[in-house]
Image (cartoon, rainbow, N blue to C red):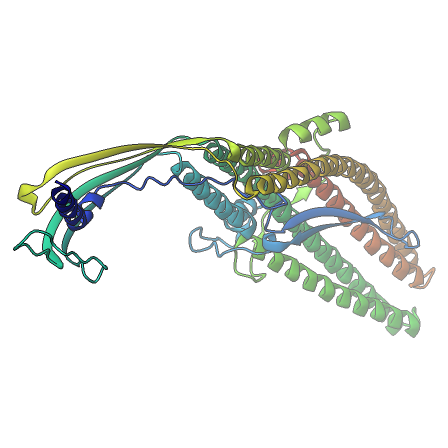
Length: 515
């Protein structure tokens, strides 16, 4: 009896070894995936490191100019470049402010890069979502197998007379058609990872809107600089014409003995000075146009004309308290920072949930047999409840990292709120100073032009030499530049206020009066 049982055991062992491959076919992987909280970078600020800032630096008080502030638009990082736009959007050779802004929004590297970051965030969100959705795969297996039992260390001494256990099993073949399904029933870490990714997508959407606002500030400021540079060139050209007329008059008076040679020399020096000043201003105009072209995707040259003038006009009526309320409600960068805080909170929840159980279901269905005609359907369903007990301190480490990220994001949000308030207040101060400066410059230009007319009358009448005329011409030239710079400063301050309030992409026409 004992011998028979042992013989049956040997036979069962042989059968198990010979059919081991078949027993493994169709069995789903039952080891559950261990979810880990998504790790966010410490800082939630824009990784492009680009910025556009309107600044107003004070002019030293020792100057004879009435200008008290010197406006400029500082552009750094990707906002200073663009991709070519003329192939997709033909250019007529005349650039309006609206067209410049449109080209900047579509082809400037600032919003273009942020748009790619948004696409990347959306892709990452889909990756985290895939961990919560069913994963289905199918395969067809065709196999031929032969097993050497002796090489595997299995040796048998058969107690049955006349029966010898084989050392080679096979060859045998099988075909397997199978579909596998893996589904997470609940995994709170994976769920919060997906919610974190969703918050990051929303944050990137707001960052893209903020990048578009910065592009409007950059392109609008550059366009205003071109207008101001062109106005300086026109003023210098008019001054050169006046100086040339005075030189001609002095030369004629000297030829008839009315004026001295020193008057002719003085007039000639004035012509040369105005001519060199014109060359310098034309050079600056060309550079400003090249800079504007770089921002808008146009060929980097000055072979085009700007078709708009932006005159002096009062900004929309708004108090500083109303402006602060609008800024805190509308600024896209503030909304992006708030969403970064929410993403960090979700990430902390995901790290905390690493200690909770998770449940998953694995299943497969298919047909297996020595050939397709003899295949028989088989299936399996396995549910796995994973209960984390000790993971070497990984959950605690993830919590520490998530809390550090959350603290940093909250600090950045508080700093941004303070910076937005300072942007609004600074824009109001610059706007008030620029408006006062425009009024003074306008009156100063009127007085200097009147003085020039009076001194020209005295010189024409031979009552005085041309010293006073040359001095009056310099005063008029300075007054014209002051007025141009003052109007430019006022327009820049209005554009900066529009940026400080938010949604400048839509609101800039309300702040700038275009001719």
